[in-house]
Length: 401
Ligand SMILES: Cc1ncc(COP(=O)(O)O)c(C=O)c1O
Image 1 (tube, rainbow, N blue to C red):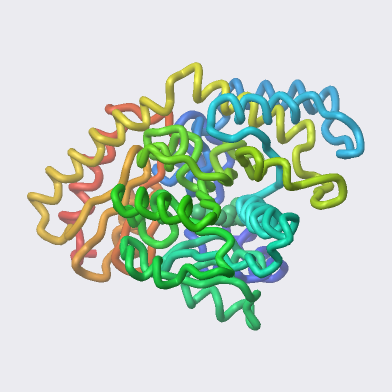
Image 2 (image 1 turned 120 degrees about the vertical axis):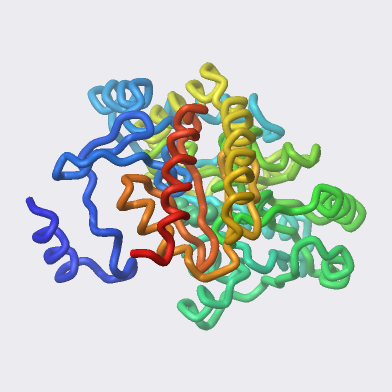
């Protein structure tokens, strides 16, 4: 089909939640590159918004999916599933978690985390401990409850009346969070770096104090690692940057490298909260999703992609820093590993994103003045050099097209 026909069909039959999308339809990908239906080549510096951890069509992931699909795509959670048990073991052995439960998306994983935290206290007879404190500018998903957990009003409007039991505080303000905690607080839920909120970093000392506060008050800490997890920030999990451990953390996006899967991971005794009948999922943790995720996690470990994300990310940020010296419009560059945000002192992020696209490079914008870069973890220094050349050209062209 031609792009025009696809767009017409989409406009007629697909619910228009994504507005006018970038006018392209991709046909195949390899490594960090994508090709559209007309054969044009692109460099993917958005990685499906932090999903394509191994890049496109990594042979390990393709073979894992093929082999599993030829044997067994799905069977019910009424039966034991080998790849599910194996994936849970790998995640537990490579994190602070003792047990894992699988879902199909980040929002579902966060729903499970919230449910787990509340049920943990309810089973202790503490029904009043249900409130979850989250942060302004956070993002936790699009389900009714994760919208309520999300600290951005633009999402709240879409799901009124909001699910009860959430309280929002500004990040990096210890007094505010201390004031928000009371006898109803069950958990504090946080992203190590706020992705959808604009690549906002959290202070190390602040979050370590929040951990202490949780310990003192008997509150659980939940890290939403949906975007930061699986090596994205140059550590396997974002919370490792702070040398603290949460009782619960969630994963999705990079975990399946493009195959939909989510996970809630918890330490004992919280991990033992879910008992038969307390939770479930038809698709969550099915053989195909778990085999795909096993191949992703093993490849991240074997190919040392976490270290690669840290090294190439640091190089990327330093090169962007050099570029910003030449172009006064970049007001801030921030991030860790391959989760990078660039803030501009004018509302030009959409124009920049479009100019990058014309050059064959995919990046994202958060609001009108932040560009977000989330490339595959296999990115090399040479790829960064190509990007920097291109980005220099784009910044030179601004306002001239
Ligand atoms: C931190 C975070 N949590 C949750 C989600 C929701 O994940 P999903 O879209 O897979 O439901 C996202 C998605 O962007 C996210 O970045």
